Each structure stands twice: as C-alpha cells, then as structure tokens.
Amino acid sequence: MSEMKVEAATFRQVLGYYPTGVCVITALSDDGMPIGLVVGTFTSVSLDPPLVGFFPDKRSTTWPRIEAAGHFCVNVLASDQTALCRQIASPGDKFAGVEYTLSQHDLPVLGGAMVAIECRLETVVEAGDHWMVMGRVLGLEARREADPMLFFRGTYGGFAEVN
Image 1 (cartoon, rainbow, N blue to C red):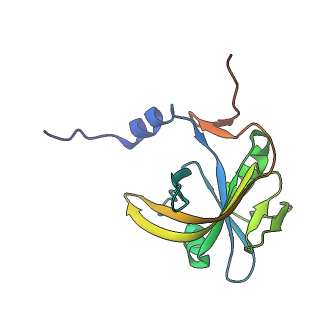
Image 2 (cartoon, rainbow, N blue to C red):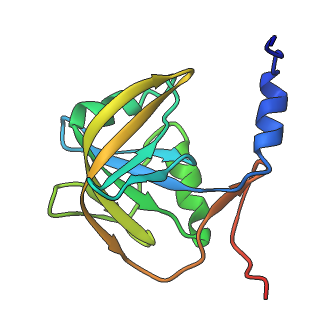
Image 3 (cartoon, rainbow, N blue to C red):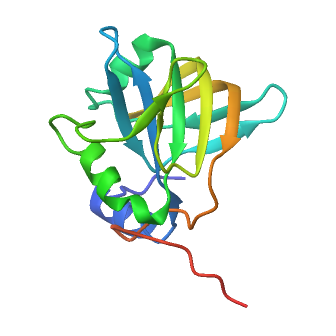
C-alpha cells in the first residue's frame, strides 16, 4: 500500500475542524521569572499513575526553558481570556501586567484560569515536528466555573450548549 503525500496546508485546514481547548503551560525560569507557552494539544493520559500530556512545537524557544525547570503548571483558559492568550503567545514580555500567583510547588498559576494542574516532567518523546510531553500530576484544582476557550478553524471562541 503506497502512502499518499499529505500537504501541510490541507492537514492544518482539515484538522482545524476539530476544536481544541487552549492552555498555557507555565514554569519559573532559572532566574526565577515566569515563563509561559500557549498550547492547544493538552490531554489526559492516565489515571494510574495520574499523567497528562501536551505537544510543544520543536521550534519553540520557550519549551526548552520549561523543560529545564523540570516541572510545570497547565493553566486551562476560559473564553474571556483571549487577550491573555494572545499576550503569552506573542514575543516580548509575556507576563507584563499578567496576574498570577505561585503555587505550593512554586509554579505560576494564572489569574482567572479555570483549572490549574501542577506536574513534574515525566517523559519527553520526539513526535515529528513536535515533542510529546507527559507530566505526572502533583496537584490539581478547578478554580472557577466558566466557558472554556476553544480554538476552532483558526479562531478562538467559546462553547455553546445545545439542548
């Protein structure tokens, strides 16, 4: 069976029909400053042991700094946090004016995040042009009831219930 060549633009367009949640992975850099990376590839992996995963791009300049920290926090964003998402996804001072607190594991938890999941880095595996990262959950908390931020067909949005 021969493999069909899949064009990157077609791959991105078609998979854009599958909505994903939006999270910010945070940690403290070696100089004690907060660092953050926006991902739309977060997932639960295992209940026993409790593992979660995400897939940072190999071109990311932030991921190696989070990896070096050895632990991270997954901040699940709400639909009203688009400006925060765009700021952290942009180059420059990602945390200028951003509200956050440090958790008991010394991890930045973003103000207004729906969920915070603190993890120790467990495994990093090469996965094409991304890394597959798994973290062992050290603690987690649902922080507020809100509509989740979703990424769908190239735009950010919320969730609408249908009865």
